[in-house]
Length: 243
Image 1 (tube, one colour):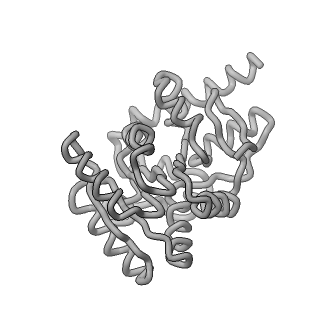
Image 2: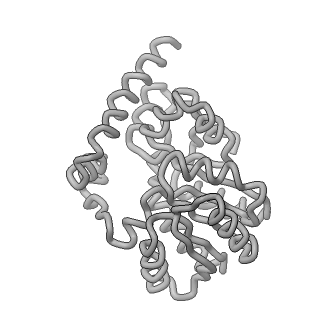
């Protein structure tokens, strides 16, 4: 999509949830290889020091604002994004779309056993959905080749990749040319949430943009990673002043 803004040099498409779903459906129908990424403030900060990640983000077919910080930054720049498009929620809508349109999906990521549990939960909710395959995300070179061969044999319409940042983005970028898929989308820890390994913040905390706080309470070890949030705001303000 051509309509986007740049936040700290990273492209974020100006779409709401409905527009994102429609665009992804269009990409599937066009039958080309495409990849979708869900940048949040932490990822954008990471991309400031990881040129490969920054290039991957800026070459994606669609980047949605997965984080209240990204939407806040757009306000600072004076080019406000319509809304936060959380990657977890976008995945849920795409599962529904796939069930309705008879698109096949493949789940790749998380720990051994978790992705299989995720498959069972998704199948219970969408019994008509074609989940053509699953595999955990702990891949050495030999296993990665095997998984790619399996994906290419199954030829899913949508490949969901949940390996964490930046591994999942680099996996897709490095392998998309040889993957027989129409859409590859990063989903972070969504499999863990669906499987019940990690609880998502209650709706009121999501509404108040406090999901980050809920995650920190659940996982205090994330404190170091959370420091990316104030750094992100500082970098955005500095960038805005320079402009």
